[in-house]
Length: 228
Image (cartoon, rainbow, N blue to C red; front, side, top):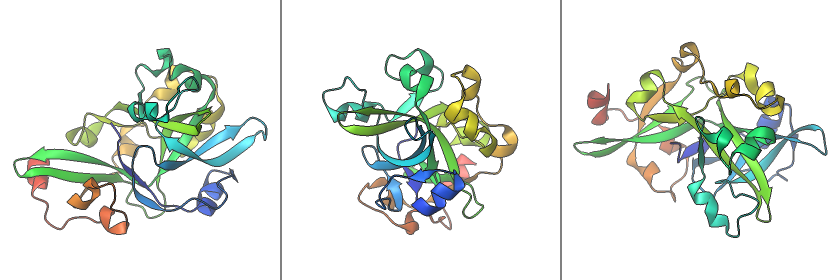
């Protein structure tokens, strides 16, 4: 699953990268430890504007019929294998898909000494990642979920799931094409081989912690030997 990630690019950077209009009202702030229920930047197509927009959405999909926003706590991820037939996710897959910009995501590996945190990211500065997501609107505002798929390649050594990553040439189809299972195919091994699996400190485990130090590589992680 994806339960914690970092997203630090500015609204200006994201609107330029995704050719989107900004509707965040300059309220987007860097977050190195974004957790469920936090506001997350998403790129979606706004029907009234007929254009891509950069919005803020609560992480954890809150269905339109929900009476409590805490419903979204159980819906932070949508499994690619079943979302098309899900009562909760299918309507959004059909017409409310979004891109969730990220710098990278975190996972934890159990070791004999406890747990070791890892940060999966693109090592090329400024390039970042694009997660496939779904969004919806309810009386509680916009909310979103991140689509996950079976982990591929070396990423499977960290966790059996990973976010569905979108390469740039797929952004337009993901946002606008008719719903099709082919949209849920994981990226190829060439793209995944360029990702870095970076051991990081334990501080990321506390949601109150934030800052660039959370993503810094540990010099000598105890778990790296057992993992790789």
